[in-house]
Image (cartoon, rainbow, N blue to C red; front, side):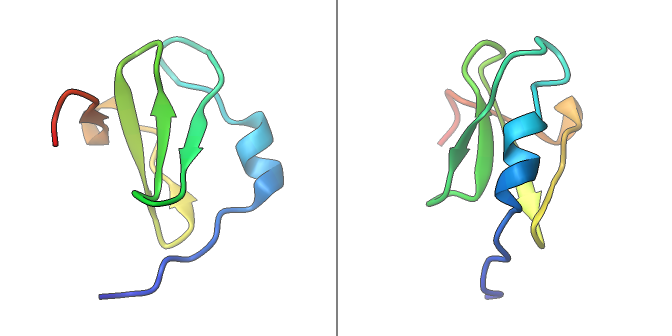
Length: 62
């Protein structure tokens, strides 16, 4: 398994959910950006947030 690449903190400050335009919460443990407003978790791959709703995990999923 690859070690997680850190996300630039400045990038985290400006990113918003593409659906709701609300702030995101960084989940370091799962390496995801959480949009509580949309109920989605956007994955981060190799330090790059994947901000596509079709790639996001619904928060009610394990």
